[in-house]
Length: 372
Ligand code: FAD
Image 1: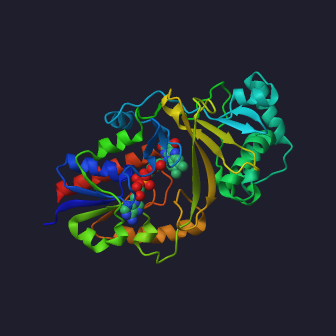
Image 2 (image 1 turned 60 degrees about the vertical axis):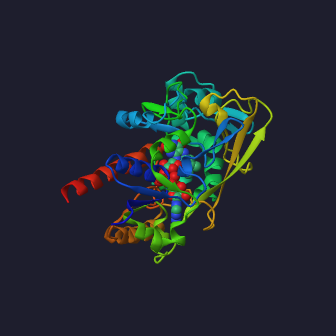
Image 3 (image 1 turned 120 degrees about the horizontal axis):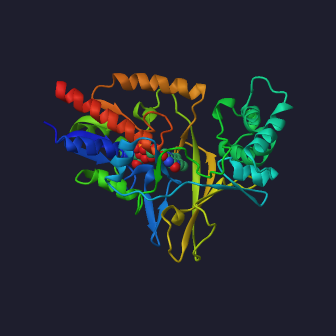
């Protein structure tokens, strides 16, 4: 009999939740991660008492009461509400697009006036079936919002002109005719008090975690330690890239410590001008209403993914989706291996979604064990 029931590759939310659920069932899990910390992309680094979201701003939100209770059983979440603002040509606008934004843009005070204004900008457009992202966005929100708040940001985000981006990237744009700056519509929202490490540490408590261990450096030996493998790394790498590499969009984070209490007065400020190379500045202390004498900000620069930089956003176009499907078929036939999480499923998952997916996978696995 092997030393462990499960070898779990990756200590992100998928791996951490899966291992926690298996531990509850009395299973022995070994979690490995190639990074020097656990928690995957939700990991925070404490700098001057501030929890810095090392891999980009993370705001937890869900409509699912059970899931909310689940995460709150490891750490209490605070009352943070995401209300980003955007800067265009030195002017501030509230997001998501709502009555505050419309008032600032056009001085309109009622929903009727705002709707009429947007309609008047869409009406004269001579666009049939939108052929690209620009046309799609114009049809949804009109010229002003598109030019000032969407175009530059999106072009930076994807590294190409909006006219060359496919329309499907923007299926809908939230437009709200109330004075409500809350970015999300979900019932539950917040940040773990004390940072996300409290959540992932809680999930991994009592489980052996080995850091700085890359599965691909020692694959056979690691496989031999456990009966089954849970793989949350890149699916194309697992299969030696035999159908080619899956592509991603990457990001570069530039963290700065400032000797002042408050840099921008908000957790997230978007920069929508094309000429400014970053898309947003995050001021981390505001996620937890911090009162530290200093502050840490992060500038987020979108960049091409080189193959060696961090893979952040999957490119779900036809080409990559076709390649992924081939890997997915191989994965389905791979005996004794469970594939899960954003890299193995080549899918953008929000945190609540990846947790739900790991809980589901763990429950299915437990059922299979029970019926075996
Ligand atoms: P990961 O967190 O990536 O974990 C995978 C782990 O596997 C990593 O630790 C990695 O080091 C390890 N690994 C990979 N390959 C190997 C290997 N070969 N050997 C050993 N270990 C390996 N979600 C929200 O709900 N709200 C937000 O506001 C939000 N903001 C986001 C902002 C950004 C910029 C990004 C990129 C994502 C955001 N998300 C947000 C999504 C969130 O980050 C994911 O849902 C979550 O991190 C996915 O967890 P995971 O376990 O699938 O993957």
